[in-house]
Image (tube, rainbow, N blue to C red; front, side):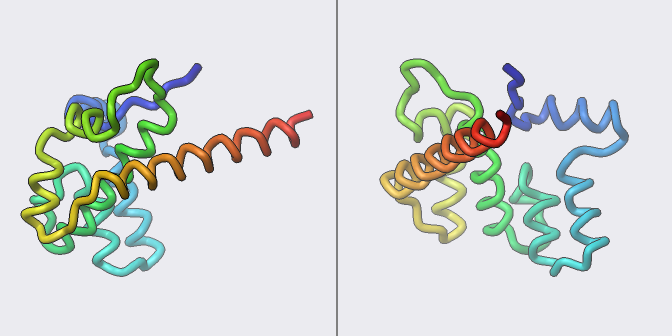
Amino acid sequence: QWMVPFSTGERLHAEQAQFGFNHATIGGQLLRQWQFPGNLLAAVEYHHHPGQAPAEQQCAQVVELADLLAFFTVTPEDGAPVLIHRVERYLPDLVLRWRSSGLGWDSAFLNRWFAHLCGNLEQTRSLKSIFAH
């Protein structure tokens, strides 16, 4: 099965070395070309380094967490640890940064939202299998 690796610093460096850009940069360029507002540009371009965003650091943090949750939906773990422990493994300072930015943190809400994402992924796979026959 094809696995999408989470965008670690090493992965971003490898993208940059191989292609001359990384997915955050190209995403920002596409949004700029399509004339999306600046706050969305900053959120996409800086989602791996929200603290470096010239503006919209909170939005960049939201995209950073969404990126990680998307990664988790396609990389199930047997006997998976509690979601917050998985988050802390990849982004150890996320909760602290989230709270210091003035964003509320609610682990129970995060778990419910992640379960919803996983459920939608399963529905999508079921629909694809129906139409594939």
